[in-house]
Image (cartoon, rainbow, N blue to C red; front, side, top):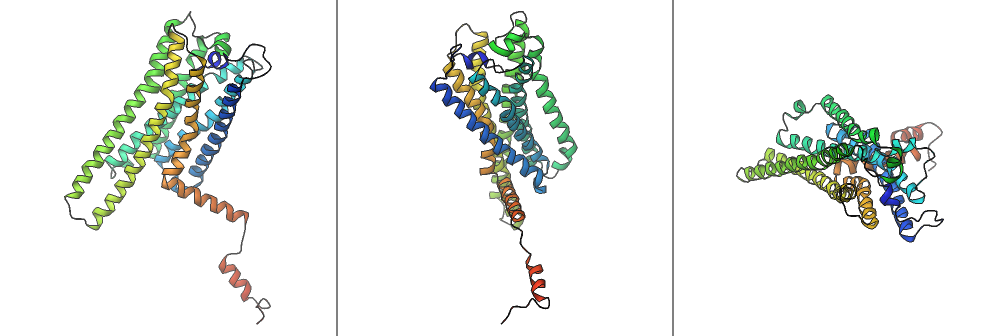
Length: 339
C-alpha cells in the first residue's frame, strides 16, 4: 500500500514550512512509534525470557508483536519522513524496499491473529487432544507459512510498477491494469481482510457456543471439586478468547477504512480528500500500538510474567546478600554483633 500521493498532497511543492495539520500528524505518528516500539519490544522480551510463556499459544502472539514492532520500526518512520519531504529517499531503490512493508507487516499481523483464533478454538474444543493437534513443530511451520504468505502478497506490485508510481504517485500501473485489479481485490481485500475476518468470526463464535454449552452442562451437575476446577479453567480460556477477539476486531476496524479509501482512490472516478486519507492512515497505524497495551492490561499471564521479569531485573541492579548468606556471615567468628 503506497500512501505517498495522498499523504503529501497537502504540502505545497517547494514549501519550506509545514502546515499545522502536518506538524500534528507527525507528532502523533512519532508518539505511536515510541509506544509501539516500547510496548511490542517489551512484549517480545517477556515472551522470550519467561519460560512459562514459551508455548504454542504465545508463538502466535510473538509473531503478532514482531509484525507490529517491525511496522513501527521500518514503515511508519518512512511515512513521517515523507511528510517532511516527499523526496526524502536518497535513492529510488529504497522505495522498492519500503513500499511493500505495509502489506507485509499488515498481512503478517492479521494472519497471526487468525492463527491465534484457530489455536484458541482448538484449546477450548478439545483440551485433552490439543497437544496432539497442535504440536510445537506444527506451530512453527504455520508461523513460517504466515510470513512466507505475507511476503508473497507484498512483493508483486514492485515487480511491474514503474519507479515514479512506487516512489511518488502511488497510482496503479495503466499498462498492468488487470493485474492491479486482481492484486488489490483478490490478494489484498480477499486474503488480508475478508478471509481472516471470516476465520476469526467463525472461530470465536464457536468458542462462545462451546462455552455456553459447557455452562449449561455444569448447571445440571453437582458442583463437585473437579467440576469447579474445570469451570475455572474454561472461564479463564473464555476470558482470554474475549481479549483476543477484541484485538482481532480492532485490527479489522482500523484497517477497513483505509482499504476503502485506497480502493476509491485507485479505481474510482471520484477524488478522495487528503483529510480522510490522513485520518484513516493514522487509525491504521494506531493498531500497532494498541495490541501490546490490550495484552498487558487484560492477559493475566503476560502481566504476571512482566512483573516477575521487572522484579528480577531490579534485583540484579540492586544486589543483596540472600538471607542464608547473611546468616552464615554473621555466624562467622569475629562478626558477632556487640551486645
